[in-house]
Image (cartoon, rainbow, N blue to C red; front, top):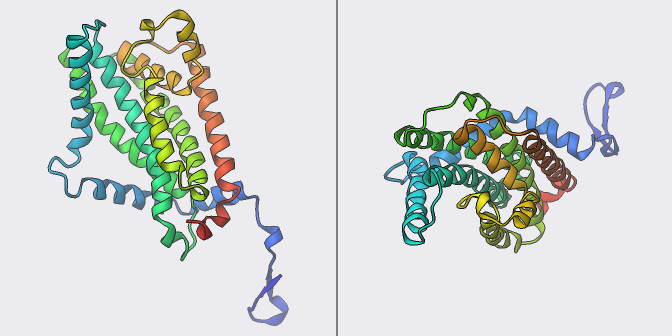
Amino acid sequence: MTVIDTAPAGNRRYYDSAERAAPWLEELSGLMRYRFLIRQLVARSIKTRYKRSVLGVAWTMVSPLLTMLVLTLVFSQIFRFQAADYALHVLSGLVLWNFFAQSTVGAMNDLMWSGGLIGRIYLPKSSFAVAAVGTGLVNLGLALVPLGLIALALGQPLNPVWWAVPLVIALSAAFALGVGLLVSSLSVYFQDVAPTYEVLLTAWLYLTPVIYPVSLLPPGLAAWLKLNPMHAHVELFRDVVLRGVVPSAELVVMGLVSAAGALALGWWAFTRKARDYAYQV
């Protein structure tokens, strides 16, 4: 027990480490107090990413368009793969997938690169993951612009279900934050996690209906695809953005359960050892 020397002696306050709040609650409280830091981290990430880029922020909108053009050329022309509105199908999937991949990788890398900072001053370690997801949301918002323009150019009007886009994105953001916190907590102790996760992301991409429709798969394989949590998030996004329909109750429940489960697991895994991260990174 350490005495904090304040006057007068009769009013001295005592600090007892045993009286500290639970790690998950202490981290959440710190995150609320340091919310200004999250805004600064997001702004820094945006400025750093596009500082020397010729296209600047516009690259966020151009990048998925270029990928869409390549995939459309390869699958629709070379392999003669036919699907209605294939370009929009690919672009909508890529927009959400890029948000998830960039947010989770960014959460992991930002924590590791900030080891010198968190070793000198106190700040909530989860702020790096939250800021990474915040940066991803900014990029996602920019990427929605060309998606809407391409949809209009191909004769598909903006549908009235777009009001649900923020709700669907909120579920995807919660899922991304949970996964980002989980891989961040592992990468602190195991250096191989970062490169391994990036390889697994590539495999995960092909296990998610981003560049192909679910209808292309055999019924048995399509049923197994529902075990992939990103399947629900991609299809929820496509329902409200591309198809203009209210998602089914089953799909909404899958999205809610995966988002809540990932966030709860990631927050628990990250905060239980957050006090020791300054000595590990």
